Length: 141
Image (cartoon, rainbow, N blue to C red; front, side):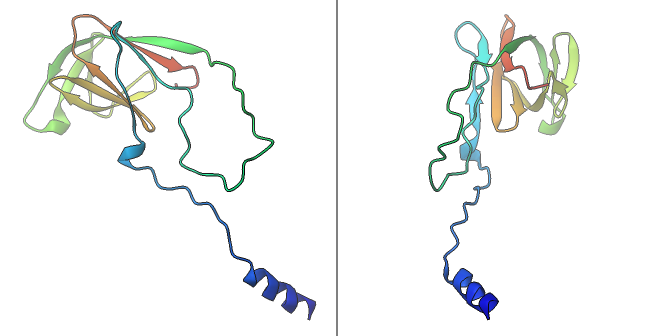
Protein backbone atom coordinates (compact mmCIF):
# COMPACT_ATOMS: atom_id res chain seq x y z
CA UNK A 1 0.00 0.00 0.00
CA UNK A 2 2.75 2.43 0.93
CA UNK A 3 4.66 1.55 -2.25
CA UNK A 4 1.60 2.36 -4.37
CA UNK A 5 1.22 5.74 -2.69
CA UNK A 6 4.92 6.52 -3.19
CA UNK A 7 4.80 5.38 -6.81
CA UNK A 8 1.74 7.59 -7.46
CA UNK A 9 3.43 10.53 -5.73
CA UNK A 10 6.66 10.05 -7.73
CA UNK A 11 4.69 9.85 -10.97
CA UNK A 12 2.95 13.14 -10.22
CA UNK A 13 6.23 15.06 -9.84
CA UNK A 14 7.34 16.56 -13.16
CA UNK A 15 10.85 15.59 -14.22
CA UNK A 16 13.34 18.46 -14.53
CA UNK A 17 16.04 16.70 -16.45
CA UNK A 18 18.65 18.86 -18.12
CA UNK A 19 19.84 17.45 -21.41
CA UNK A 20 22.94 18.58 -23.19
CA UNK A 21 22.28 19.82 -26.67
CA UNK A 22 24.28 18.04 -29.34
CA UNK A 23 27.27 20.02 -30.57
CA UNK A 24 26.44 21.97 -33.69
CA UNK A 25 28.45 24.01 -36.11
CA UNK A 26 27.45 27.10 -34.09
CA UNK A 27 29.30 25.64 -31.10
CA UNK A 28 32.57 25.55 -33.07
CA UNK A 29 35.22 27.93 -31.68
CA UNK A 30 37.41 29.34 -34.47
CA UNK A 31 40.90 30.59 -33.59
CA UNK A 32 43.05 32.61 -35.99
CA UNK A 33 46.59 33.91 -35.46
CA UNK A 34 46.99 37.52 -34.35
CA UNK A 35 49.27 40.09 -36.00
CA UNK A 36 52.32 38.47 -34.39
CA UNK A 37 51.36 35.08 -35.86
CA UNK A 38 50.32 33.54 -32.51
CA UNK A 39 47.09 31.51 -32.26
CA UNK A 40 46.16 30.92 -28.61
CA UNK A 41 43.69 28.14 -27.87
CA UNK A 42 41.24 28.96 -25.07
CA UNK A 43 41.62 27.10 -21.76
CA UNK A 44 37.91 26.84 -21.11
CA UNK A 45 35.24 26.15 -23.69
CA UNK A 46 31.72 26.87 -22.43
CA UNK A 47 29.70 23.74 -21.84
CA UNK A 48 26.44 23.32 -23.75
CA UNK A 49 24.68 22.14 -20.57
CA UNK A 50 22.67 24.58 -18.49
CA UNK A 51 22.23 24.13 -14.75
CA UNK A 52 18.69 24.35 -13.38
CA UNK A 53 19.90 26.01 -10.17
CA UNK A 54 23.28 27.59 -9.46
CA UNK A 55 25.58 25.22 -7.64
CA UNK A 56 26.96 26.86 -4.45
CA UNK A 57 29.80 24.33 -4.31
CA UNK A 58 31.12 24.89 -7.82
CA UNK A 59 34.71 26.00 -8.11
CA UNK A 60 34.67 29.53 -9.46
CA UNK A 61 38.36 30.39 -9.71
CA UNK A 62 40.81 28.50 -11.86
CA UNK A 63 44.45 29.58 -11.93
CA UNK A 64 45.94 30.21 -15.37
CA UNK A 65 46.95 26.98 -17.06
CA UNK A 66 50.52 26.50 -18.26
CA UNK A 67 50.84 26.53 -22.03
CA UNK A 68 53.23 25.18 -24.61
CA UNK A 69 54.00 26.69 -27.98
CA UNK A 70 54.39 24.76 -31.21
CA UNK A 71 55.77 26.28 -34.38
CA UNK A 72 53.92 25.50 -37.59
CA UNK A 73 55.65 26.56 -40.81
CA UNK A 74 53.53 25.75 -43.86
CA UNK A 75 56.14 25.41 -46.58
CA UNK A 76 53.96 24.09 -49.43
CA UNK A 77 50.36 23.18 -50.14
CA UNK A 78 49.61 20.59 -52.81
CA UNK A 79 46.08 20.77 -54.22
CA UNK A 80 44.74 17.73 -56.10
CA UNK A 81 41.59 17.03 -58.09
CA UNK A 82 39.91 15.51 -55.01
CA UNK A 83 39.82 17.85 -51.96
CA UNK A 84 40.26 14.87 -49.63
CA UNK A 85 43.66 14.15 -51.17
CA UNK A 86 45.21 17.58 -50.62
CA UNK A 87 48.49 17.59 -48.75
CA UNK A 88 50.90 20.06 -47.23
CA UNK A 89 54.55 20.25 -46.24
CA UNK A 90 54.63 21.46 -42.65
CA UNK A 91 57.90 21.91 -40.75
CA UNK A 92 59.64 19.94 -43.50
CA UNK A 93 57.37 16.87 -43.28
CA UNK A 94 54.51 15.84 -45.58
CA UNK A 95 51.02 15.77 -44.04
CA UNK A 96 47.58 14.84 -45.37
CA UNK A 97 44.06 15.41 -44.06
CA UNK A 98 43.54 13.34 -40.91
CA UNK A 99 47.20 13.41 -39.81
CA UNK A 100 48.05 14.76 -36.35
CA UNK A 101 50.46 17.53 -35.35
CA UNK A 102 51.13 17.79 -31.59
CA UNK A 103 47.63 16.60 -30.63
CA UNK A 104 45.81 18.62 -33.31
CA UNK A 105 44.20 16.88 -36.29
CA UNK A 106 44.47 18.35 -39.79
CA UNK A 107 40.86 18.63 -40.93
CA UNK A 108 41.26 20.71 -44.08
CA UNK A 109 44.03 21.74 -46.44
CA UNK A 110 43.29 24.51 -48.92
CA UNK A 111 45.18 26.95 -51.09
CA UNK A 112 44.92 29.63 -48.39
CA UNK A 113 46.11 27.50 -45.48
CA UNK A 114 45.26 24.60 -43.21
CA UNK A 115 42.65 23.93 -40.53
CA UNK A 116 43.64 22.10 -37.36
CA UNK A 117 40.98 20.66 -35.04
CA UNK A 118 40.92 19.70 -31.40
CA UNK A 119 37.38 18.85 -30.33
CA UNK A 120 35.20 21.93 -30.89
CA UNK A 121 38.20 24.19 -31.53
CA UNK A 122 39.29 24.93 -35.10
CA UNK A 123 42.62 26.69 -35.69
CA UNK A 124 42.89 28.33 -39.12
CA UNK A 125 46.52 28.89 -40.14
CA UNK A 126 47.27 30.81 -43.34
CA UNK A 127 50.14 30.09 -45.70
CA UNK A 128 52.79 32.72 -44.88
CA UNK A 129 56.52 33.24 -45.23
CA UNK A 130 56.92 33.22 -41.46
CA UNK A 131 56.02 30.40 -39.07
CA UNK A 132 52.78 30.47 -37.11
CA UNK A 133 52.89 29.74 -33.39
CA UNK A 134 50.04 27.77 -31.85
CA UNK A 135 49.79 28.21 -28.09
CA UNK A 136 48.24 25.06 -26.60
CA UNK A 137 47.13 24.26 -23.07
CA UNK A 138 49.45 21.61 -21.59
CA UNK A 139 46.69 18.98 -21.39
CA UNK A 140 46.38 18.71 -25.22
CA UNK A 141 48.77 16.01 -26.38
